[in-house]
Length: 167
Length: 167
Image (cartoon, rainbow over all chains, first blue to last red; front, side):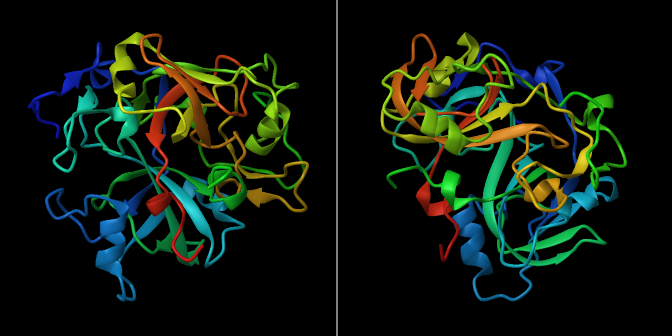
C-alpha cells in the first residue's frame, strides 16, 4: 500500500515518517531472496510462507549479505534459529490505526504485524538450512516478503530471552 | 563503545554505516524509560534486567510513545507480550567480528546480540504490566538499555510465529 487510500476506521499518524528526513539512517546490509516477485503473490505472513514451502527442498528462501558485512556470519551454523529484520520498502508509513481484512475492528499498528508502520521493519524467526559464508548466503525455511526486500539485521534467536517468562 | 578501540581478533566491516547517509531513514517514535542513566550501570542483557527487577513493583521500566503515534497503541492490553525494537544510539556500527568478554572466540556480529552492529537495533520480548494510552506509556517488566534510548517499533509477540517450529 504505497497508495493513499484508507479503509473505514483507519487513522493517520500526526506526522508521516516517509516524508521526513529521519532521526537516524538505516544501512541495507543485503537482501532477502524469495520466489515472490509481486505483493499479490507474496504470502501474507510467515505461517503462509512456511506452508507453501512445506516439503519442498530448495523452496528458494534465502538471505544474502553484502560483501562488506559477510565476516559477520562467522559462528552461524546449519540448524540455528535466527531473527531476520528486513525493511518493507514498498509499505506506506502513516497509518497508526488499521483495518486489515482479517480483523473485526480497526486496530492500533502496535498491536498488528502489518508491514505498514512508522518504521516498516519486519521480523521473522526462521531456521538456517544451509550457509555459504563466502557468498554471504543463508538458506532459510521461509520468509514472507517479495524478492529483493532489503535486509537490515540478523540476530541469533535465544529461547532464554525470546520466549517470554511464564509462556 | 563509541570509542575506536578494537580487541584482538575483532574485524571492521568494509564500510562504516555510521559514516554513511543511510539507505532509509528511521523515525524515533518515542523512547525507553529505565532506571539506568549510564552504560556502566546498565544491565548487559534482558535476563540481567529482569533479575534486577524481580520482586520490585514499579521497577521503572516503560516505553513511551510520542503523541503523533499514540493511537497505534489501541488493542494492546495489560498482560500482553510485545516485541520492542529500540535504537542503540550510543553504539558504534563498524565491527563485524567481535570479541565480547563473555565469549571464548571472536564471533560474527550476526551470531551475537551485541548492540554494536551495522544497524544498532535491539529487540526485547517483554510483558505489558500496565498501559496509559492517553499518555502513551506502557509499563513493562524489564528492558536492557539506558534511560532515553530511542524507540522505533512495538509489535505483538505471537507464539505461533515467534517460536520456531520444532522448538
